[in-house]
Image (cartoon, rainbow over all chains, first blue to last red; front, side, top):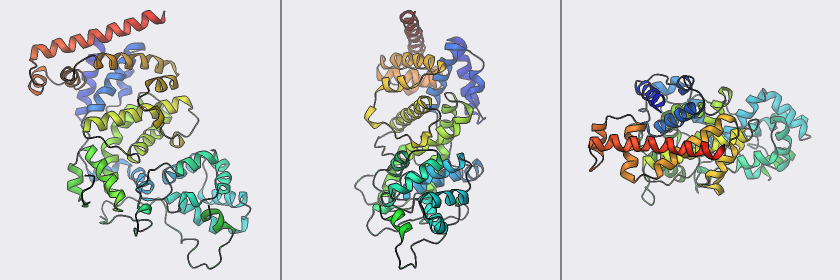
Length: 213
Length: 209
């Protein structure tokens, strides 16, 4: 255990000094059970280690803003973790939004309504569209495109407990920063297209698919 | 915070909050329809680097970002109702372990789509069965030995081990922080803990051969 404790002390010193402190660099120096023991002890240290002080500039440079925005969209939206999950799945599938929309519209049997399907898909990604209103047919069409089951996508849409803005009577459907700070604002994932139902009197098949449940 | 009139806080107040208060504030803000962008950003910034380090020890490099992001997503979108930073950190550790287990159970599955198994709350056997790679098997033996050795200590001695062994604080500082523990006792408690871990690991070797 002596070697492990020596390496743990070195690791703690590096972490406290603000170095990168990638534990794998220390784990590589031992093998077998000692490696497992060192990993567990580093983990024990990191569980207790003080978190860094909030530093807006470091946050901006960290590349974490898109993640924070996705989490926030999920919290504020009405579609569970879709705002975090859907962009990630399409990215992994190496699908451009436009290609995904073409395939989704075709799979839904509305290839001539790509623009409207695209707008609704955008709302799904932003958490603006209540998940329970999205018909199973949409998820059954979307699942194979993204490489996952409709059931898994449905479950992701339900993942967050009540309390989001959409559950608060009178609250805006999608509140953003109440006190926006232009220096802090995270970059938007994408610019919002107009709401598909806005200004339309006719409720068509696409509306029924995405909003009719 | 629960039950009181919700008051929106500014950046400096949020930045000074301990993590469990930030999480509580986040829940209240959601329930009150108040913006959550800033507290989410602060929590992501404070937690992500060490979550990423912890995940990096247990999953392949290409999966680190996905698993770490899923941990954050799970932590910030779940209802945590603990009352201390220690409870929050222990809860975060549980999420980290489960998400790592989810990854090892099915590496090709999108880990973000796996719900947290609330029904297995506190069930180490579930976590244990899910981890099947060779390093994980050894890791689980070690973690269980460490957990058991810690559990066998009384709360004061657990704190001594936490501060002296896991935080590498000087024995004198540990003695000053824990009542009725001398510097000499700190050394003895830490050594007994190390010896117990070694014994437990030897026992596991004996039972596995």
